[in-house]
Image (cartoon, rainbow, N blue to C red; front, side, top):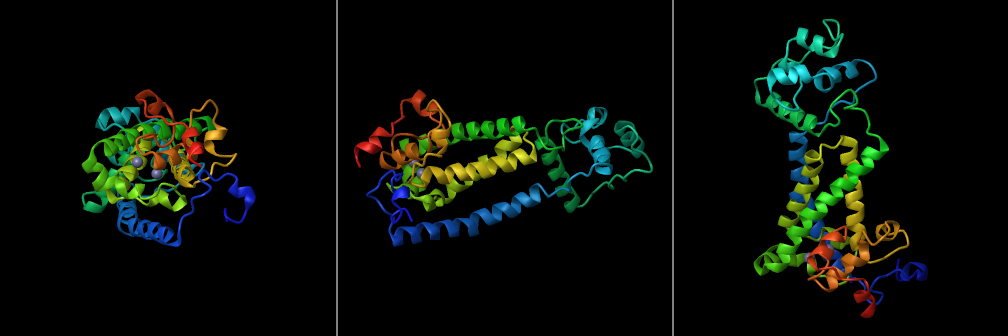
Length: 298
Ligand SMILES: [Zn+2]
Ligand SMILES: [Zn+2]
């Protein structure tokens, strides 16, 4: 499309470079392989680890949640498991006390589980409660827009630091580069499909941090989902090969954000621009390369 549309073509970072049919097919094949043999099993494992939960309704479940998370300080102290404030850990009378009106007529507590399935469910609940913020009556309500925005930015910043270190090491240590990262550098002019053209170790590492970081930062589930969507978007944008006026790096002022032109430079000049999103780590470590490098070789 970029070839035929002059209006699109003008934003191409390396106008003279085009992916060939074979490179497109190669990237599509690697992406398909990664999704079938890594992403799908990881998704199933994550589903088992953090099973889906019912959304609360306005009445009954809200009371149930208050018993679990909101007024759970007494229960938490009693059972000594941070984050787990579950009716299964207390008697109905205790749950009623904590819920403030939650009593024999309300929803019944689940039976104590002894088998593997209930154990897995319990671990999932602990994980969910750890990821559920803020603790309190609002715990299961949607976060405020400011909370959601701050959570997404916080996750991007944390991932940016983690991947910067990983990326730096995988370029500075030859064995790591050749064994794990070189496959991503088969392309000096990236295109969208290059995003997922990764080795298994890199994909697992990236997926691990993307999944774990919202739990570490105790993000609300909605914030987690928003982060995942934004993360996928900016990762593809980094590799799309075009620097559009609406690129994230142009929308965020003061050169804080790198965006597609900065990562494109990394594919041309691999010892620069290791951070995936922001610029500060590369500037601090002296590995930042300006887009002017890219412009000078057109
Ligand atoms: Zn890349
Ligand atoms: Zn690299």
